[in-house]
Image 1 (cartoon, rainbow, N blue to C red):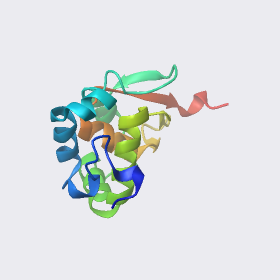
Image 2: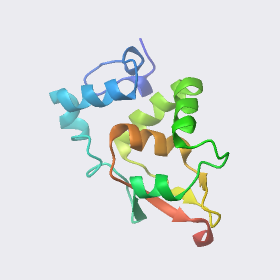
Image 3: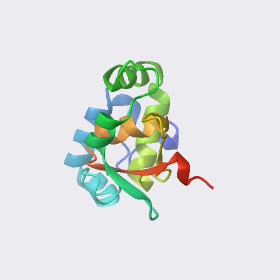
Image 4: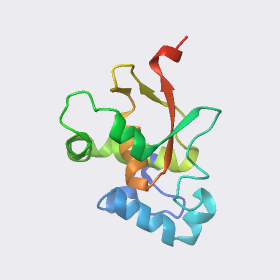
Length: 137
């Protein structure tokens, strides 16, 4: 049996789903999961709180991942090298939304939130909560 943080509302173990795309497909098809999490368009689970929001496509086009390899390479690296953390974060986002905004630097880099961006992108979110580094107090 998988740890509770890797089991969906219907009892499906996330580790038996081959990727985040399969998780999203399952979530949108499963009546139990839709009842517990809502449909996966990001509208009802995008975030809690009153953060500023940015279109995900705009963020990925305007801000770099930091190592200048590009988001495709960054997301592939996360998927291949940090799968357990991605699965756990996916379930957390499905349950609670993105509760910590993506931190954007004045140098047009994402300073914090690469995993959250990957999960939001993979789940098809249109917007994500953001915070500009200059806004930190």
